[in-house]
Amino acid sequence: MIRRCLIAALLLGLVAAGPTLADDPVLRIGTEGAYPPFNFVNDKGELAGFDVDIAKALCKEMGRTCTFVATPWSEIIEGLEQNKYDLMVSSMAYTEERAKRIAYSEPYYRSHAVFIGDPKKYQDISPEGLAGARITAGKGTMQAQYLAKVYGKSTLVLGEDQPEAQALLEQGKADLMLGDAIELMSFLESGEGSAFEFIGDPVTNDFLQSTAHVTARKSDTALLEQVNAAIKKTRLDGSYERINDVYFPFSIY
Image (tube, rainbow, N blue to C red; front, top):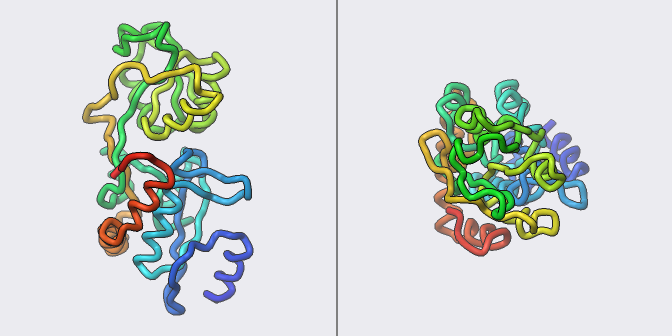
């Protein structure tokens, strides 16, 4: 049965590189696939990005064979609860609300939330300074929840995911976007995002956490212990740094 599952996964191009144990079950990894450069679908139609490569490295350290499942962000926690996958490696930040449903590993990278927009039009990013402005973010993200909570005098124009939110900004349907600083860097450096810049300082508070975690069902604490050990091993053997350097000119750990 396991061999048939592996063959099927290979045909789909979804099996991560690394040693496999014949008596080990396949470890299913859920990720979004719409959050570049962390996770996205490449030109070959395959899931790729920092999250995917880190997941493969963790699988290798754990001696597991892994497959990947692309899931919309708005459904990703529900998919874990419904046993569609065993772990989520999808830049999931900690919130108290999420922690009621899922369990978290140690952090595997850190970042901050920032606004981007036209610096000639906006400098003051306080709720008063952005009163009347149209602000976008991806639905279901912490940034969208924070905007709804704090920026009541602004108009929220949410995208289904991060790329759609960026498109709303580019098309002039939104004036600013609140998102993850590292994720937005590649957008600002692209032709589509070159007209925009970071506005103001990073938004840091108790609500907008700056760490990303591997997550699992609350019942799978033993699995998360293995994940935590694997994260430490990737740091010690240099594999984390090698993956980091593919995507970023600085350490995001």
